[in-house]
Image (cartoon, rainbow, N blue to C red; front, side, top):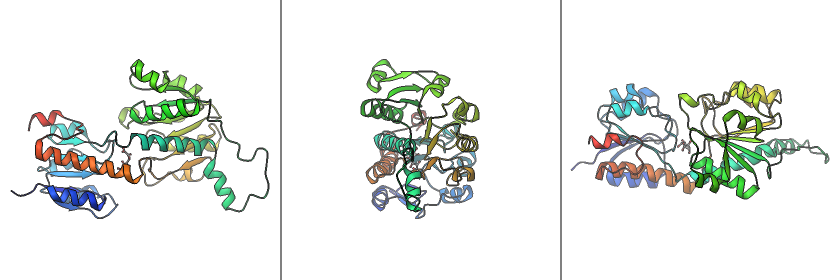
Length: 328
Ligand code: 8YV
C-alpha cells in the first residue's frame, strides 16, 4: 500500500524527518522561511497531511484549494495560525503540541522577567560599549523580584508554571486573571489569587502575559491598560504578538509610564516595531521561549506522533477539533 503524502512545512530536525519517512511519503521544506500562501497551496496539492510550525496560516482559502488535506499537526502549543472553524467545516483535523513545552517556556518567562526587572541586557550593552568607568550608587538599579507582586494574565499550564516559580522560588505574591477561575486546589498549588484585570494591572509589580491569541485577546494590553500600571512596573509578553499594542508600549516605555518590558513575541514578527528598537528599557528576544533542544525535539516528536496516530489508528494524541474524528 502506498504511504500517505505529507508536507513538512519548515525545516525540522533530521531525526524527525527520518521518522516521518518510515510512515509517510514526505516532502520536507529544507528552509526556515515560511511559505507564502500561494507556495503553501502549491506544495499541499495531493498531500493528506501537513506538519506545520505555528506560522503557516490554514484558512478557508487554503482548505478549499487543498481538498486532499485531512490533518495539520502544529509543532506549537498556540494554534492561532489555524482557522479552527474552517478546518472543522472542511473535515480537517487540527492538532497542537501542548504540555511538552510547559516547564521550559515557564523557565524562559521567568528568565525574561528577571532580565527585564534587573536590567541585565541594558547594563551589558553599557559594559560592552566601554562606558563602565566607575561604580555608581544608583547605577542600573532595577525592580525587586523576591517578595513583589506578580500578576499573570492567562493562567493555563504555562501561567501556572510561572506562578509556581514566583510563589515558591521567590516568595512573590501571585495574582492572576483568566477567562475562568482555577479550581481551588490548583489555586492553592500555585499560591495564586484570582483578581479582575484592572486590579491586576493596578497592583502588580510585574505583569506576565501568557494568554492565547484570538480576536478576543487582541491588544489585551494597549494604551489604556498601560496607563493603569504602576510607573515602576515591568511587563513581559511570552504569549503572542498582537496581545500587546507594540506602538502604544513603545510610547509608554519612552515616556517611562512603565519601567520596563521584556518581549519574546511581536506584532508582525520577525519584523519588530522600529520604535521598540529605539527604547533602552526593553529586553527583546526572537520568539525563543520554548527553545531548548530537548523541548523542541519533544514538540516535533509530538507533532509527528499526531500524524502517525491519526493515519494509522485514527487516534491523534492532542486533537484540537476532535469532532472531526467521529466523521472518519
Ligand atoms: C514555538 C510557540 O516555538 O508553542 C508555541 O505556541 O509559540 C513556540 O513554542 C513556535 O510557535 C514555533 O513552533
